[in-house]
Image (cartoon, rainbow, N blue to C red; front, side, top):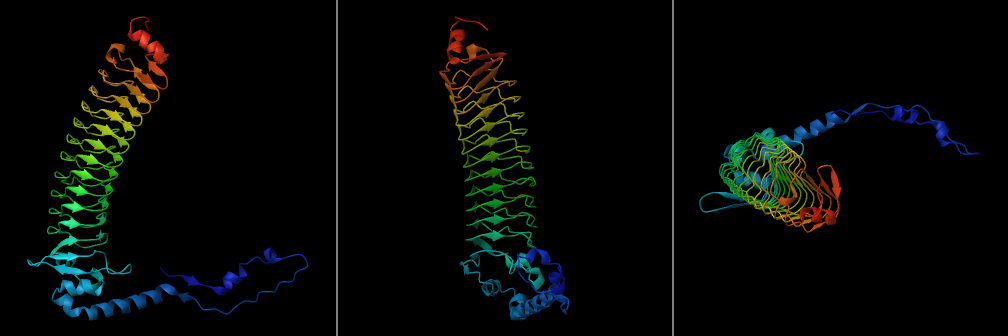
Length: 363
C-alpha cells in the first residue's frame, strides 16, 4: 500500500475559525512547499534488502536443508532425539512481512522431521501440506486457511485448536484438545479418537460426522447446523449445549449439562441417562422421546410440541415449566416448580398440579 503524504493539504484543511478565541490573534497559514513521499515504495525497498540478506545468510543451510540452523536463525529452539526427530519451541512464519516461501525455503522439508512443537504452532499462510510425523503441539494450533491436509499422527493439542475453514481431513490419532476447539465450516475431518475438549467446542456448520469417542466437553458445545451424528460416548458438557437443527441422533451416555440445553428441531432421540440440566432446557419440536432419568432443570423447561412421553424422574424445575399436552400421570415425581406450570391451554400452580395428579381436580 502506498501512502501519499501532503503537508500543505493538511494545513489548508484546518478550519481557522475553529482556532478563534475572543480577542485572540491567530497566524495566517502560508502554502508550504512539499514533495509527495511514497512510503510504500520505501518499505518495499527495505524489505527486499532484508530478504536478500536473510537468503545470503542462510544460503548454505537452505541448500543443505539444515533445519536446525534455519530454526536457530529465527530464534526457534530445537532439540534432536536419537532417531533424528526434532522438538521445536514454536512454529510461525519468519516475519510479519515475508514467509518461508519468499526466502526459497520448502516448508514440507523444514517440518518433515518435526515430532513435537512445545509452544504455539501457526500454519496460517504456510505452504506445508504434510505434517504426518507431528505428534504433539503444546500450545495453540492454527490450521485455519492453511494448506495442511495430513496431521494423522497428532495426538495432543495443549491449547486451542483452530481448524475452522481449514483443509485438514485426517486427525485420526488426536485424543485431547486442552482448550477451545474451533471446527466451524471445516471439512469432514477424521476425529475418531478424540476423547476430550477442555473448553468451548464449536462444530456449527461443520461437515464432521463422527465423534463417537468424545467423552467430555469442558465448556460451551455448539453443534448447530452441523453434520455430526454420533456422540454416543459423551458424558459431560461443561456449559450451554446447542443441538438446534443438528444431525446428532445418539446422546445415550450424556449425564450432565452445566448450562442451558437447546434441542429445538434436533434429531436427537435418546437422552435416557441425562440427569441434570443446570440451566434452561428447550425440547420444543425435537425428536427426543426418552428423558426417563432427568431429575433437575435449573431454569425454564420447554416440552411443547416435543415427543417426550416419560418425565417420571423429573423432580425440580427452577423456572417455568411448559408441558404442552403431556399427561400428568407421566410426571409422577415432580416436587417443585418455582415458576408457573403451562399445560395444554392452562396455567397452573404447583398446588393445583398436585391436586390434578391426585385426581382431586381435572383439566
